[in-house]
Length: 53
Image 1 (cartoon, rainbow, N blue to C red):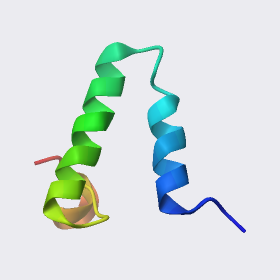
Image 2 (image 1 turned 135 degrees about the horizontal axis):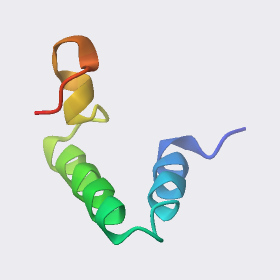
Image 3 (image 1 turned 180 degrees about the horizontal axis):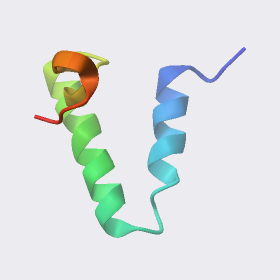
């Protein structure tokens, strides 16, 4: 059985620890998703899933 979305997101966040800018961007995206109450990133919610908002 997998770790689930929280474990996957935490692992992805931890992988950016050596790059402060990438870590902060990833953390900001996770916070945005939490505030929006959705598992979809801003990129996922845009048409075609290709454009960041």
